[in-house]
Length: 173
Image 1 (cartoon, one colour):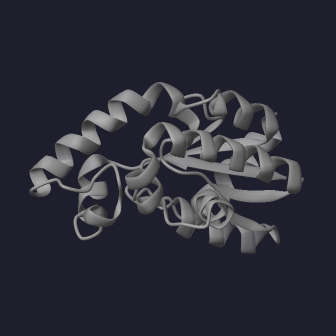
Image 2 (tube, rainbow, N blue to C red):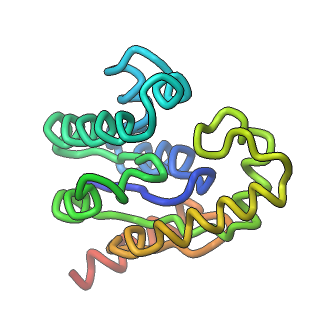
Image 3 (cartoon, one colour):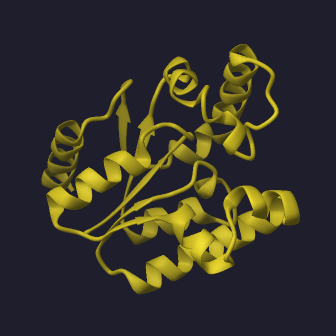
């Protein structure tokens, strides 16, 4: 099985991905970690030195490398991964995609202390600005996220809830 987790920053892709990989006895991969390893510098440094276009290209290459290297995997993508370089279509064609659809208010609560360390959220002056940026970003990404075969729409997508979603989906597929 290949399971790809997509969703906004702070939606829990990495945390849930680790739990699901353990449950299904699969390898867990965080795409941001792959990018850092391949590029030899942090995501923040990549954005600062090279810009978003370079980062998105590196992200697409890393995604394709992961797909080539792992016939069975739980992959936590970056928040913007499905939105560039036909990645949403590639993910959909390569495995089961799950959108972690977490309310913006919950994302703000989770990210307010981390925003300075996230390139697309850094420099926002207060929680209200963070909320506005997240809402705008979600609106722009929604069409890509909505291509996922599965959607967990909750403040917290528990491993148990996702396992049930996957079981229901595979029973009818």
